[in-house]
Length: 256
Image 1 (tube, rainbow, N blue to C red):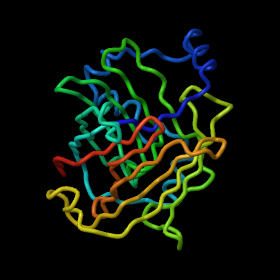
Image 2 (image 1 turned 180 degrees about the vertical axis):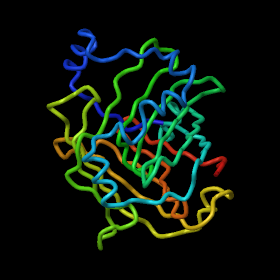
Image 3 (image 1 turned 30 degrees about the horizontal axis):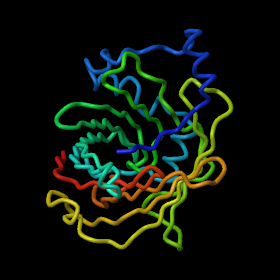
């Protein structure tokens, strides 16, 4: 799946790496104990205090699960059958307090691992800190992180128009200035049974159709999420980039 990625100041990042200011983590060390890496680097205390305060002030939760594991089957670029690729994705979610979710996302093809992504998110909808690694690479890159919010709506409290809006500054974790601006706006669809997404899910669900914009207010991509009301979390099932349109179906879910 084409995930949301944010590009920081490349020259600054390169200088930090070369100067030794940024720690260089080996991919093989991450893969040796993924949960330990997650806990050390993707817990809420690794976020800016103002970011956590903004999230908690708007929406303290709770989430309706301790852990959830989604298995999805993605068809990438299914708008062009000459480019369509099938990807299997496993999303392991963990409740880490309030409305903040810890994610480990594993992408594979033909049973062969391709990449892993680590997130802290607001209900699976807004990535607060993220990092993607290629399992064949030597070194892990620096994570990107939300530095501040200029506008933040609770996912379960849309405006009268049925929309929710997020405006923020983002950069890599080592960056201390020249942050990029980003925005995501979402429109809420009608409720339907969550069993339509997968028979193992309970309660109601609704679609959130979201559009992401860059610092120039130009559309970057759009994403459709399924928001699962009972569990208080969103899962992406459709993306539209300039390079292609992709769709997923949830094949199984495990809930604890």
